[in-house]
Amino acid sequence: MTAAIVDAGGIKICEGDRRYAALCRGLDPRRRARPDYIRLVSDSAQVRHALEQAVNEPVSDPSRTRIAVRSGGHCHEDACGEDVRVVIDMSLMDDVHHDPAMDAVCVEAGATDGDLRKKLWLRTGKVMPGGSFPSAGIGGHVPAGGFGLLSRQHGLTVDHLYAVEVAVVGRDRRVRLVTATRDSRDEHLRELWWAHTGGGGGNFGISTRFWFRDLPDAPERVLFTAGGWKWADIDKERFARIVGNFGRFFAEHRRPGGPYDPLSASLQLTHRSQGAIRLIAQIDAGVPGARDLLARFLAAVDEDVGVRRRSLGEPHGCPTLSGLHTPVVLPWDTVERLLGPADGMRAGKHKSAYMVRPLPDEQVETLWRGLAEDVPGVARDAVVQIDSYGGAINRPAPGETAVMQRSSILRLHYQVHWPITEQGEGHLRWIRELYRSMYAATGGVPLPAFLQDDPVTDGCCIGHPDADLDDPAWNASDVPWWRLYYGRDYRRLQRVKERWDPLDVFRHPQSVRLP
Image 1 (tube, rainbow, N blue to C red):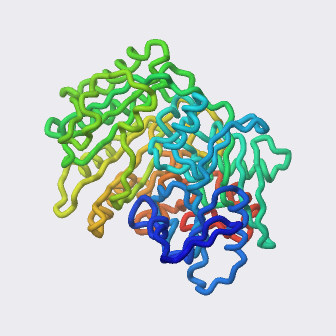
Image 2 (cartoon, rainbow, N blue to C red):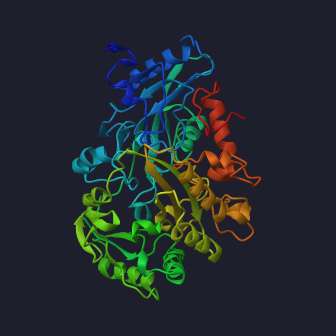
Image 3 (cartoon, rainbow, N blue to C red):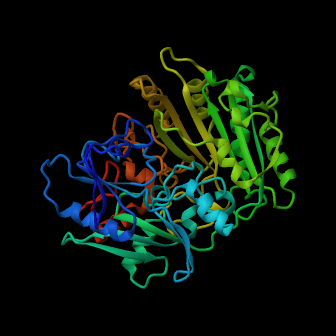
Protein backbone atom coordinates (compact mmCIF):
# COMPACT_ATOMS: atom_id res chain seq x y z
CA MET A 1 0.00 0.00 0.00
CA THR A 2 1.28 3.45 -0.92
CA ALA A 3 1.89 5.61 2.13
CA ALA A 4 0.03 8.90 2.34
CA ILE A 5 2.00 12.15 2.65
CA VAL A 6 1.08 14.57 5.43
CA ASP A 7 2.25 18.17 5.13
CA ALA A 8 0.97 21.75 5.34
CA GLY A 9 -1.62 20.93 2.67
CA GLY A 10 -3.21 18.10 4.68
CA ILE A 11 -3.17 14.41 3.78
CA LYS A 12 -2.07 13.62 0.23
CA ILE A 13 -3.53 10.34 -1.03
CA CYS A 14 -2.33 8.73 -4.25
CA GLU A 15 -3.37 5.65 -6.17
CA GLY A 16 -2.39 2.60 -4.15
CA ASP A 17 -3.74 4.01 -0.90
CA ARG A 18 -6.72 2.04 0.42
CA ARG A 19 -8.78 5.25 0.57
CA TYR A 20 -8.14 6.32 -3.02
CA ALA A 21 -10.95 4.46 -4.79
CA ALA A 22 -13.66 5.57 -2.36
CA LEU A 23 -12.59 9.21 -2.58
CA CYS A 24 -12.58 9.24 -6.40
CA ARG A 25 -16.32 8.74 -6.82
CA GLY A 26 -19.46 10.70 -6.13
CA LEU A 27 -22.76 9.40 -4.83
CA ASP A 28 -23.62 8.22 -8.35
CA PRO A 29 -21.17 5.39 -9.15
CA ARG A 30 -20.88 6.66 -12.72
CA ARG A 31 -19.22 9.85 -11.44
CA ARG A 32 -15.64 8.72 -10.97
CA ALA A 33 -12.32 10.46 -11.54
CA ARG A 34 -8.73 9.18 -11.66
CA PRO A 35 -6.83 12.15 -10.22
CA ASP A 36 -3.09 12.20 -9.68
CA TYR A 37 -3.89 12.61 -6.00
CA ILE A 38 -6.53 13.62 -3.48
CA ARG A 39 -6.03 16.11 -0.69
CA LEU A 40 -7.90 15.59 2.59
CA VAL A 41 -7.88 18.97 4.31
CA SER A 42 -8.78 19.72 7.94
CA ASP A 43 -8.79 23.53 8.12
CA SER A 44 -8.71 26.65 5.99
CA ALA A 45 -4.91 26.97 6.15
CA GLN A 46 -4.53 23.48 4.72
CA VAL A 47 -6.97 24.36 1.93
CA ARG A 48 -4.86 27.39 1.04
CA HIS A 49 -1.61 25.39 1.00
CA ALA A 50 -3.14 22.48 -0.94
CA LEU A 51 -4.68 24.75 -3.55
CA GLU A 52 -1.56 26.87 -4.01
CA GLN A 53 0.55 23.77 -4.50
CA ALA A 54 -1.92 22.30 -7.00
CA VAL A 55 -2.13 25.51 -9.00
CA ASN A 56 1.65 25.95 -9.28
CA GLU A 57 2.98 22.41 -9.74
CA PRO A 58 3.97 21.08 -13.20
CA VAL A 59 1.23 19.40 -15.25
CA SER A 60 2.33 16.46 -17.37
CA ASP A 61 -0.97 15.79 -19.18
CA PRO A 62 -2.62 18.88 -20.73
CA SER A 63 -5.92 17.00 -21.01
CA ARG A 64 -6.04 16.58 -17.21
CA THR A 65 -5.63 19.98 -15.59
CA ARG A 66 -8.76 20.53 -13.56
CA ILE A 67 -8.89 20.91 -9.77
CA ALA A 68 -12.18 19.62 -8.32
CA VAL A 69 -13.61 20.06 -4.84
CA ARG A 70 -15.63 17.39 -3.04
CA SER A 71 -17.79 17.94 0.05
CA GLY A 72 -20.72 15.53 0.19
CA GLY A 73 -20.34 13.98 -3.25
CA HIS A 74 -23.95 14.56 -4.37
CA CYS A 75 -22.87 15.28 -7.92
CA HIS A 76 -25.58 14.76 -10.52
CA GLU A 77 -23.37 15.45 -13.52
CA ASP A 78 -19.77 14.99 -14.56
CA ALA A 79 -18.22 17.69 -12.37
CA CYS A 80 -15.54 15.18 -11.34
CA GLY A 81 -14.62 13.56 -14.66
CA GLU A 82 -11.60 12.32 -16.58
CA ASP A 83 -10.08 15.79 -16.93
CA VAL A 84 -9.64 16.14 -13.16
CA ARG A 85 -6.01 16.11 -12.00
CA VAL A 86 -6.50 16.94 -8.30
CA VAL A 87 -9.42 16.49 -5.90
CA ILE A 88 -9.54 18.54 -2.71
CA ASP A 89 -11.82 16.69 -0.32
CA MET A 90 -13.47 18.75 2.43
CA SER A 91 -14.91 15.84 4.43
CA LEU A 92 -12.74 16.44 7.52
CA MET A 93 -13.84 20.09 7.75
CA ASP A 94 -17.15 19.38 9.48
CA ASP A 95 -17.13 21.68 12.51
CA VAL A 96 -20.22 23.66 13.52
CA HIS A 97 -20.04 26.29 16.25
CA HIS A 98 -21.24 29.73 17.30
CA ASP A 99 -18.72 32.41 16.33
CA PRO A 100 -19.04 35.34 18.78
CA ALA A 101 -16.84 37.57 16.62
CA MET A 102 -19.28 37.20 13.72
CA ASP A 103 -22.33 36.86 15.97
CA ALA A 104 -23.27 33.96 13.71
CA VAL A 105 -23.23 30.18 13.46
CA CYS A 106 -20.15 28.98 11.57
CA VAL A 107 -20.47 25.81 9.48
CA GLU A 108 -17.47 24.31 7.70
CA ALA A 109 -17.96 23.27 4.09
CA GLY A 110 -17.40 19.55 4.69
CA ALA A 111 -20.27 19.27 7.17
CA THR A 112 -23.27 17.33 5.92
CA ASP A 113 -26.96 17.74 6.59
CA GLY A 114 -26.63 14.77 8.93
CA ASP A 115 -23.85 16.53 10.87
CA LEU A 116 -26.13 19.49 11.44
CA ARG A 117 -28.52 17.39 13.49
CA LYS A 118 -25.86 16.74 16.13
CA LYS A 119 -23.72 19.84 15.84
CA LEU A 120 -26.35 22.52 15.22
CA TRP A 121 -29.73 21.34 16.43
CA LEU A 122 -28.65 19.39 19.52
CA ARG A 123 -26.28 22.16 20.62
CA THR A 124 -28.38 25.22 19.84
CA GLY A 125 -31.94 24.17 18.99
CA LYS A 126 -31.52 25.99 15.68
CA VAL A 127 -31.96 24.52 12.22
CA MET A 128 -31.17 25.28 8.61
CA PRO A 129 -34.35 25.40 6.53
CA GLY A 130 -32.77 23.49 3.66
CA GLY A 131 -31.64 19.93 3.10
CA SER A 132 -33.37 16.57 3.13
CA PHE A 133 -30.56 14.03 2.60
CA PRO A 134 -28.20 13.48 5.55
CA SER A 135 -25.24 12.80 3.24
CA ALA A 136 -25.49 16.08 1.26
CA GLY A 137 -22.47 18.33 1.83
CA ILE A 138 -22.91 21.96 2.85
CA GLY A 139 -20.19 23.07 0.44
CA GLY A 140 -22.39 22.13 -2.51
CA HIS A 141 -25.84 22.52 -0.99
CA VAL A 142 -25.54 26.13 0.17
CA PRO A 143 -24.23 27.77 -3.05
CA ALA A 144 -27.11 26.09 -4.91
CA GLY A 145 -29.64 27.88 -2.67
CA GLY A 146 -30.42 25.34 0.02
CA PHE A 147 -34.04 24.19 -0.42
CA GLY A 148 -35.65 21.82 2.07
CA LEU A 149 -38.66 20.79 4.11
CA LEU A 150 -38.72 23.99 6.18
CA SER A 151 -38.15 26.42 3.31
CA ARG A 152 -41.78 27.48 2.81
CA GLN A 153 -41.82 28.45 6.49
CA HIS A 154 -38.35 30.02 6.83
CA GLY A 155 -36.97 30.61 3.34
CA LEU A 156 -33.97 29.08 1.61
CA THR A 157 -30.75 28.43 3.49
CA VAL A 158 -29.02 31.28 1.62
CA ASP A 159 -31.62 33.70 2.97
CA HIS A 160 -29.79 33.31 6.30
CA LEU A 161 -26.23 33.40 4.93
CA TYR A 162 -24.22 36.25 6.45
CA ALA A 163 -20.67 35.46 5.36
CA VAL A 164 -18.51 32.99 3.45
CA GLU A 165 -14.77 32.30 3.53
CA VAL A 166 -13.30 31.41 0.14
CA ALA A 167 -9.85 30.33 -1.02
CA VAL A 168 -9.29 32.26 -4.26
CA VAL A 169 -6.51 32.20 -6.85
CA GLY A 170 -5.15 35.51 -8.16
CA ARG A 171 -3.55 36.29 -11.50
CA ASP A 172 -0.17 35.77 -9.83
CA ARG A 173 -1.24 32.20 -8.97
CA ARG A 174 -1.08 32.97 -5.29
CA VAL A 175 -3.92 31.77 -3.07
CA ARG A 176 -5.64 33.97 -0.50
CA LEU A 177 -8.36 33.31 2.04
CA VAL A 178 -10.95 36.05 1.84
CA THR A 179 -14.09 36.53 3.93
CA ALA A 180 -17.05 38.08 2.13
CA THR A 181 -20.03 39.31 4.13
CA ARG A 182 -23.46 40.58 3.29
CA ASP A 183 -22.46 44.04 4.51
CA SER A 184 -18.79 44.15 3.42
CA ARG A 185 -17.60 47.68 2.70
CA ASP A 186 -15.74 46.42 -0.36
CA GLU A 187 -18.20 46.03 -3.23
CA HIS A 188 -16.22 43.15 -4.73
CA LEU A 189 -16.50 41.23 -1.46
CA ARG A 190 -20.24 41.90 -1.26
CA GLU A 191 -20.57 40.54 -4.79
CA LEU A 192 -18.58 37.43 -3.88
CA TRP A 193 -20.98 36.86 -0.96
CA TRP A 194 -23.94 37.37 -3.30
CA ALA A 195 -22.54 34.84 -5.80
CA HIS A 196 -22.62 32.21 -3.05
CA THR A 197 -26.35 32.75 -2.47
CA GLY A 198 -27.38 30.63 -5.45
CA GLY A 199 -24.60 30.99 -8.01
CA GLY A 200 -23.66 27.32 -7.76
CA GLY A 201 -20.55 25.58 -6.47
CA GLY A 202 -17.19 25.19 -8.18
CA ASN A 203 -17.26 28.60 -9.86
CA PHE A 204 -15.23 31.16 -7.91
CA GLY A 205 -12.98 29.42 -5.39
CA ILE A 206 -13.10 26.85 -2.62
CA SER A 207 -15.75 27.68 -0.03
CA THR A 208 -14.28 26.72 3.32
CA ARG A 209 -16.67 28.17 5.92
CA PHE A 210 -20.15 29.68 5.99
CA TRP A 211 -21.67 31.90 8.68
CA PHE A 212 -25.42 32.13 9.23
CA ARG A 213 -27.47 34.64 11.19
CA ASP A 214 -31.07 34.51 12.35
CA LEU A 215 -31.41 30.78 11.85
CA PRO A 216 -34.88 29.64 12.91
CA ASP A 217 -35.68 27.46 15.88
CA ALA A 218 -36.36 23.87 14.89
CA PRO A 219 -39.98 22.79 15.29
CA GLU A 220 -40.42 20.79 18.47
CA ARG A 221 -42.74 18.44 16.60
CA VAL A 222 -44.23 18.13 13.15
CA LEU A 223 -47.54 16.72 12.02
CA PHE A 224 -46.56 14.26 9.30
CA THR A 225 -48.43 12.17 6.76
CA ALA A 226 -47.37 9.79 4.00
CA GLY A 227 -49.97 8.05 1.89
CA GLY A 228 -50.84 7.45 -1.70
CA TRP A 229 -53.13 6.15 -4.39
CA LYS A 230 -52.75 2.67 -5.84
CA TRP A 231 -51.85 2.86 -9.49
CA ALA A 232 -54.39 0.08 -10.09
CA ASP A 233 -57.12 2.56 -9.12
CA ILE A 234 -55.81 5.47 -11.20
CA ASP A 235 -56.99 6.35 -14.69
CA LYS A 236 -56.04 9.40 -16.74
CA GLU A 237 -58.80 11.59 -15.29
CA ARG A 238 -57.93 10.75 -11.68
CA PHE A 239 -54.25 11.32 -12.38
CA ALA A 240 -55.01 14.74 -13.83
CA ARG A 241 -57.21 15.58 -10.85
CA ILE A 242 -54.45 14.76 -8.33
CA VAL A 243 -51.81 16.78 -10.18
CA GLY A 244 -54.18 19.67 -10.77
CA ASN A 245 -55.41 19.82 -7.19
CA PHE A 246 -51.86 19.86 -5.83
CA GLY A 247 -50.77 22.65 -8.17
CA ARG A 248 -53.84 24.81 -7.60
CA PHE A 249 -53.43 24.62 -3.82
CA PHE A 250 -49.91 26.02 -3.89
CA ALA A 251 -50.83 28.58 -6.53
CA GLU A 252 -53.43 29.90 -4.09
CA HIS A 253 -50.87 29.95 -1.24
CA ARG A 254 -47.77 31.17 -3.05
CA ARG A 255 -47.36 34.49 -1.25
CA PRO A 256 -45.40 34.74 2.01
CA GLY A 257 -47.16 35.44 5.27
CA GLY A 258 -50.10 33.09 4.83
CA PRO A 259 -51.32 30.41 7.22
CA TYR A 260 -49.93 27.62 5.02
CA ASP A 261 -46.30 28.81 5.04
CA PRO A 262 -45.42 26.10 7.64
CA LEU A 263 -46.75 23.38 5.30
CA SER A 264 -44.38 21.43 3.06
CA ALA A 265 -45.53 18.74 0.64
CA SER A 266 -44.16 16.46 -2.04
CA LEU A 267 -46.24 14.73 -4.71
CA GLN A 268 -44.19 11.81 -6.00
CA LEU A 269 -45.45 10.70 -9.38
CA THR A 270 -43.85 7.29 -9.66
CA HIS A 271 -43.93 5.00 -12.65
CA ARG A 272 -46.93 2.66 -12.64
CA SER A 273 -44.65 -0.34 -11.99
CA GLN A 274 -43.93 1.00 -8.48
CA GLY A 275 -47.52 0.41 -7.40
CA ALA A 276 -48.57 3.75 -5.92
CA ILE A 277 -48.39 7.50 -6.37
CA ARG A 278 -47.14 9.02 -3.12
CA LEU A 279 -48.12 12.17 -1.24
CA ILE A 280 -45.90 13.22 1.68
CA ALA A 281 -46.60 16.30 3.78
CA GLN A 282 -45.62 17.89 7.06
CA ILE A 283 -46.55 21.00 9.02
CA ASP A 284 -45.02 22.55 12.12
CA ALA A 285 -47.22 21.11 14.87
CA GLY A 286 -46.64 24.21 17.00
CA VAL A 287 -48.49 26.64 14.73
CA PRO A 288 -52.09 27.44 15.69
CA GLY A 289 -54.58 25.09 14.06
CA ALA A 290 -51.88 22.88 12.51
CA ARG A 291 -54.07 19.77 12.41
CA ASP A 292 -56.94 21.63 10.76
CA LEU A 293 -54.61 23.27 8.20
CA LEU A 294 -53.15 19.89 7.20
CA ALA A 295 -56.62 18.35 6.99
CA ARG A 296 -57.76 21.12 4.64
CA PHE A 297 -54.74 20.61 2.43
CA LEU A 298 -55.33 16.86 2.21
CA ALA A 299 -59.02 17.43 1.45
CA ALA A 300 -58.05 19.86 -1.31
CA VAL A 301 -55.73 17.32 -2.95
CA ASP A 302 -58.31 14.54 -2.58
CA GLU A 303 -61.17 16.59 -4.03
CA ASP A 304 -63.07 14.69 -6.76
CA VAL A 305 -60.31 12.07 -7.14
CA GLY A 306 -62.81 9.35 -6.36
CA VAL A 307 -60.45 6.90 -4.65
CA ARG A 308 -59.01 6.91 -1.14
CA ARG A 309 -55.45 7.63 -0.26
CA ARG A 310 -54.02 4.54 1.40
CA SER A 311 -51.07 3.54 3.55
CA LEU A 312 -47.73 3.09 1.81
CA GLY A 313 -46.35 -0.33 2.65
CA GLU A 314 -43.51 -2.55 1.62
CA PRO A 315 -45.09 -3.53 -1.71
CA HIS A 316 -44.66 0.10 -2.77
CA GLY A 317 -41.00 0.37 -1.77
CA CYS A 318 -41.55 2.53 1.33
CA PRO A 319 -41.68 0.23 4.37
CA THR A 320 -40.68 3.05 6.76
CA LEU A 321 -43.73 5.09 5.67
CA SER A 322 -46.23 2.31 6.23
CA GLY A 323 -49.28 3.28 8.28
CA LEU A 324 -48.66 7.02 8.17
CA HIS A 325 -51.50 8.03 5.82
CA THR A 326 -53.32 9.19 8.94
CA PRO A 327 -51.36 12.26 10.18
CA VAL A 328 -49.17 11.58 13.20
CA VAL A 329 -47.18 13.90 15.47
CA LEU A 330 -43.44 13.14 15.32
CA PRO A 331 -40.28 14.71 16.73
CA TRP A 332 -38.88 17.08 14.14
CA ASP A 333 -35.67 15.15 13.49
CA THR A 334 -37.48 11.89 12.72
CA VAL A 335 -38.69 12.87 9.27
CA GLU A 336 -35.38 12.88 7.39
CA ARG A 337 -34.71 9.39 8.70
CA LEU A 338 -38.12 8.23 7.46
CA LEU A 339 -37.45 9.61 4.00
CA GLY A 340 -34.14 7.76 3.97
CA PRO A 341 -30.64 8.64 2.79
CA ALA A 342 -29.47 8.10 -0.77
CA ASP A 343 -27.59 4.80 -0.88
CA GLY A 344 -25.03 5.51 -3.59
CA MET A 345 -25.56 2.08 -5.13
CA ARG A 346 -27.51 3.14 -8.20
CA ALA A 347 -26.66 5.19 -11.25
CA GLY A 348 -29.08 7.93 -12.17
CA LYS A 349 -30.08 10.98 -14.16
CA HIS A 350 -31.76 14.11 -12.81
CA LYS A 351 -33.59 17.05 -14.39
CA SER A 352 -35.56 19.95 -12.94
CA ALA A 353 -38.04 22.73 -13.59
CA TYR A 354 -39.73 25.52 -11.66
CA MET A 355 -43.41 26.34 -12.19
CA VAL A 356 -45.10 29.70 -11.69
CA ARG A 357 -48.48 28.17 -12.58
CA PRO A 358 -50.04 24.74 -12.09
CA LEU A 359 -49.08 22.27 -14.79
CA PRO A 360 -51.05 22.88 -18.00
CA ASP A 361 -53.26 20.10 -19.33
CA GLU A 362 -50.81 19.16 -22.07
CA GLN A 363 -48.01 18.65 -19.52
CA VAL A 364 -50.23 16.51 -17.33
CA GLU A 365 -51.11 14.44 -20.40
CA THR A 366 -47.38 14.02 -21.17
CA LEU A 367 -46.68 12.88 -17.61
CA TRP A 368 -49.50 10.38 -17.81
CA ARG A 369 -48.09 8.84 -20.99
CA GLY A 370 -44.56 8.72 -19.61
CA LEU A 371 -45.50 7.20 -16.25
CA ALA A 372 -48.52 5.04 -17.00
CA GLU A 373 -47.31 3.32 -20.17
CA ASP A 374 -44.75 0.54 -20.14
CA VAL A 375 -41.66 0.52 -22.35
CA PRO A 376 -40.16 -2.98 -22.78
CA GLY A 377 -36.62 -3.40 -21.54
CA VAL A 378 -36.61 -0.39 -19.23
CA ALA A 379 -37.02 -1.02 -15.50
CA ARG A 380 -38.86 1.89 -14.01
CA ASP A 381 -37.16 3.15 -10.86
CA ALA A 382 -38.42 6.55 -11.90
CA VAL A 383 -40.29 9.43 -10.33
CA VAL A 384 -41.31 12.98 -11.17
CA GLN A 385 -41.33 14.63 -7.76
CA ILE A 386 -43.35 17.82 -7.45
CA ASP A 387 -42.29 19.80 -4.38
CA SER A 388 -44.20 22.66 -2.84
CA TYR A 389 -42.52 26.03 -3.29
CA GLY A 390 -43.47 29.61 -2.49
CA GLY A 391 -44.32 30.94 0.95
CA ALA A 392 -41.27 32.44 2.68
CA ILE A 393 -39.10 31.42 -0.30
CA ASN A 394 -40.84 34.12 -2.32
CA ARG A 395 -40.16 36.88 0.22
CA PRO A 396 -36.79 38.18 -1.16
CA ALA A 397 -36.92 40.33 -4.26
CA PRO A 398 -35.29 39.12 -7.50
CA GLY A 399 -31.59 39.93 -7.45
CA GLU A 400 -31.41 40.10 -3.67
CA THR A 401 -29.78 36.67 -3.83
CA ALA A 402 -28.41 34.76 -6.80
CA VAL A 403 -31.41 32.41 -6.71
CA MET A 404 -33.48 33.58 -9.66
CA GLN A 405 -36.74 31.82 -8.83
CA ARG A 406 -38.63 33.94 -6.28
CA SER A 407 -42.16 33.69 -7.65
CA SER A 408 -42.51 29.95 -8.24
CA ILE A 409 -45.16 27.70 -6.71
CA LEU A 410 -43.68 24.27 -7.50
CA ARG A 411 -40.33 22.67 -8.20
CA LEU A 412 -40.20 19.52 -10.35
CA HIS A 413 -37.40 17.01 -9.87
CA TYR A 414 -37.25 14.33 -12.59
CA GLN A 415 -35.32 11.22 -11.54
CA VAL A 416 -34.53 7.83 -13.00
CA HIS A 417 -32.17 5.25 -11.48
CA TRP A 418 -30.81 1.90 -12.56
CA PRO A 419 -28.49 -0.79 -11.13
CA ILE A 420 -24.78 -0.16 -11.47
CA THR A 421 -24.52 -3.42 -13.41
CA GLU A 422 -26.53 -1.89 -16.31
CA GLN A 423 -25.45 0.68 -18.89
CA GLY A 424 -28.63 2.73 -18.59
CA GLU A 425 -29.20 3.74 -22.23
CA GLY A 426 -32.92 2.99 -22.10
CA HIS A 427 -33.37 4.82 -18.81
CA LEU A 428 -31.54 7.88 -20.11
CA ARG A 429 -33.58 7.88 -23.31
CA TRP A 430 -36.81 7.66 -21.31
CA ILE A 431 -36.12 10.65 -19.04
CA ARG A 432 -34.72 12.76 -21.87
CA GLU A 433 -37.69 12.14 -24.13
CA LEU A 434 -40.19 12.74 -21.32
CA TYR A 435 -38.52 16.04 -20.41
CA ARG A 436 -38.33 17.21 -24.03
CA SER A 437 -42.00 16.37 -24.53
CA MET A 438 -42.99 18.23 -21.35
CA TYR A 439 -41.54 21.47 -22.73
CA ALA A 440 -42.03 20.85 -26.45
CA ALA A 441 -43.71 24.24 -26.87
CA THR A 442 -40.51 26.00 -25.72
CA GLY A 443 -37.82 23.96 -27.44
CA GLY A 444 -37.65 21.09 -24.97
CA VAL A 445 -36.65 23.12 -21.90
CA PRO A 446 -38.56 25.12 -19.24
CA LEU A 447 -37.89 28.76 -20.05
CA PRO A 448 -37.43 31.44 -17.37
CA ALA A 449 -40.63 33.35 -16.67
CA PHE A 450 -39.29 36.68 -17.98
CA LEU A 451 -38.86 35.20 -21.47
CA GLN A 452 -42.55 34.24 -21.74
CA ASP A 453 -45.56 36.44 -22.48
CA ASP A 454 -47.79 34.22 -20.36
CA PRO A 455 -45.33 32.55 -17.95
CA VAL A 456 -45.74 28.90 -16.97
CA THR A 457 -42.20 27.82 -16.03
CA ASP A 458 -39.21 29.59 -14.50
CA GLY A 459 -36.10 27.76 -15.60
CA CYS A 460 -34.06 25.03 -13.91
CA CYS A 461 -32.34 24.31 -10.61
CA ILE A 462 -28.53 24.60 -10.48
CA GLY A 463 -28.64 22.12 -7.59
CA HIS A 464 -29.69 19.46 -10.12
CA PRO A 465 -27.28 20.21 -12.98
CA ASP A 466 -28.22 18.73 -16.33
CA ALA A 467 -25.65 18.61 -19.14
CA ASP A 468 -28.43 18.00 -21.68
CA LEU A 469 -29.36 21.68 -21.38
CA ASP A 470 -26.17 22.42 -23.33
CA ASP A 471 -26.90 19.84 -26.03
CA PRO A 472 -28.88 21.00 -29.11
CA ALA A 473 -30.27 17.48 -29.44
CA TRP A 474 -32.24 18.09 -26.25
CA ASN A 475 -32.39 21.88 -26.05
CA ALA A 476 -33.78 23.14 -29.35
CA SER A 477 -34.55 26.59 -27.99
CA ASP A 478 -32.21 29.52 -28.52
CA VAL A 479 -31.89 29.88 -24.72
CA PRO A 480 -28.51 28.72 -23.35
CA TRP A 481 -28.11 26.59 -20.23
CA TRP A 482 -26.86 29.50 -18.16
CA ARG A 483 -30.01 31.51 -18.85
CA LEU A 484 -32.13 28.58 -17.69
CA TYR A 485 -30.29 28.46 -14.34
CA TYR A 486 -29.54 32.12 -13.69
CA GLY A 487 -31.87 34.22 -15.82
CA ARG A 488 -30.83 37.87 -15.93
CA ASP A 489 -28.17 37.36 -13.24
CA TYR A 490 -25.62 35.47 -15.31
CA ARG A 491 -23.68 38.54 -16.48
CA ARG A 492 -23.38 39.65 -12.87
CA LEU A 493 -22.00 36.23 -11.94
CA GLN A 494 -19.51 36.51 -14.78
CA ARG A 495 -18.19 39.79 -13.36
CA VAL A 496 -17.69 38.06 -10.01
CA LYS A 497 -15.88 35.25 -11.81
CA GLU A 498 -13.59 37.70 -13.60
CA ARG A 499 -12.68 39.44 -10.35
CA TRP A 500 -12.11 36.38 -8.15
CA ASP A 501 -11.12 33.56 -10.54
CA PRO A 502 -9.38 35.32 -13.45
CA LEU A 503 -7.41 32.20 -14.43
CA ASP A 504 -10.55 30.03 -14.60
CA VAL A 505 -9.10 27.55 -12.12
CA PHE A 506 -12.56 26.53 -10.93
CA ARG A 507 -14.41 25.12 -13.87
CA HIS A 508 -16.62 22.21 -14.85
CA PRO A 509 -18.98 21.51 -17.78
CA GLN A 510 -21.57 24.03 -16.55
CA SER A 511 -19.46 26.47 -14.56
CA VAL A 512 -19.81 30.23 -14.88
CA ARG A 513 -17.64 31.28 -17.82
CA LEU A 514 -15.23 34.20 -17.90
CA PRO A 515 -16.73 37.11 -19.86
